[in-house]
Length: 148
Image (cartoon, rainbow, N blue to C red; front, top):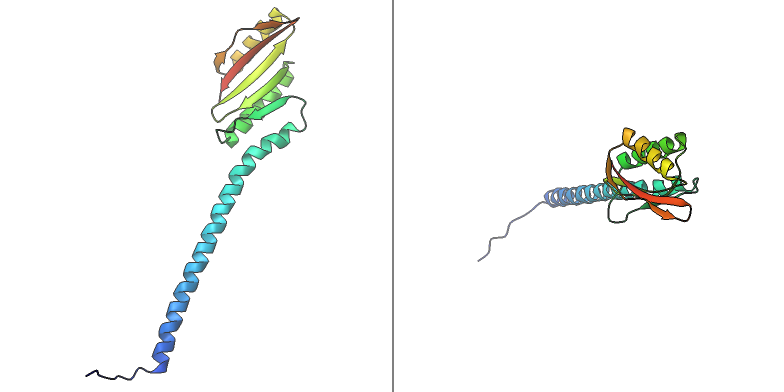
């Protein structure tokens, strides 16, 4: 035979109120965590887009390699390098930006200008790789990879 007991209604209401508060708190924590994670994702995606916006004012081609996420240090190095090239009157055709390096395709008019460009860049930056010059008509084309 079962024993019948009396449970007051105020006890059941208090028990239900505690369960509702816990559920509401868990839902609020999950919503806040989702907002924070969404903010991080948007922040990371905006870093790569800022390079393309910066490229809109230039005539040169700038490419971001899609396999790497470009960080702020690389963007700052690019800005520093582009201002350095403008100050020294060095022209570049194309820059590919990756997480660890900047790859520059340059074009010069003569072999002497080729030597001067390499020496000028080598004095200020660490050159990781240098391809030999290819004479294309009257101009020399070469590629320099600079470590960030």
